[in-house]
Image (cartoon, rainbow, N blue to C red):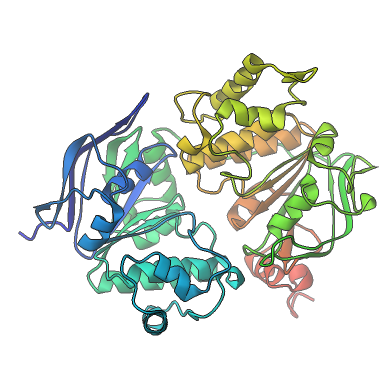
Length: 506
């Protein structure tokens, strides 16, 4: 029999205080789309880093078409035929597409020749790209095309994709899937990591499930439901977020004709944004990435100053106040970029808990830091939100993306805000953790807070929000009740049609 493209046997990787992978074994066949499933911290990232040559396992062997395979660096993996599209893009906004592609290649050809290859390959795979366009002007979906084309130019036999659809629109996801199916038809293999289980069911024919670093199951996703796959990952029944119906209370957050110039040359300025959120209410704001989400959160958090009257918290104007003053009044925010914006990468979880919780949690007295209280606060977050880490002393960058996301969101929720604004609250987290975060947001609203959830996940917004508004080109539509809102109407709102009304509906 023909050997598998890649065979992994007994792979184990141990870090101080944690066994990331324990005796992991599975095969990837030629022309197979293989899913790698697991909760945050299950060991998926460690495993693909070993395959791609970023780390060296402590035990176990890998074979490539029956021959021992032990890459000591990504360049060796690429030379063998392995390519990887990472969850976080590694692109430079101020450089064009061809220049960015060249930076990611071991031996790039001259730029003019490379530009012609980019045009040719991108059109052949249904992912058209203009090699002369500045990356800063590209949408999130187009940026991912750059990463994929950079890999395809190296003619890989195995393409590893880590959360490839987390920032894509439904239309962009369908385009990506057509490309992946084309690659499969050409005999190329794909190792696909995603928490979006309906995508797994649609695309993959085999799945390996990890839990706590070990293989706990194998499945044909086409024969499973999304719920059964999720329960296989977590090892228990999945909780569905819910809350009792309640009448909204006092007006807690009011934004009136907010206009803000983006500080980034490639950002989107806000134009006359207005919204109102009451106690006990969740407002969901949807939109394709790059339509002003970061600028809106920056304006609400105080990182971008506005006119005093444009933003009010419980009736008090706060537009001219900075982040700490707004926190003191109960307005807390959690940005999308967790590593570098929401958390300082090289600081411990204790130090990161201190950064935003210093005054609301009384962690600083007369200018002196209460480190024991700060550590206790961090440990409470870790316990309540099931953050998988050896302890509060660990640096933020050592956590998996999903676990850091749980810590960042939990840190803000546990400070009992009267107004909470979150951008992409469940980005990159598994189904169980996403359900827990959404339930925590609903519980916060139930306790009397006003909650604003900015997300590209429409299913998430339909699950948690009372009212929905769409952000398009820096403008916000008028909010509409979620109850009775159809996906067609939402699509029109996302495209800039005010209210999402069709001619028939009008």
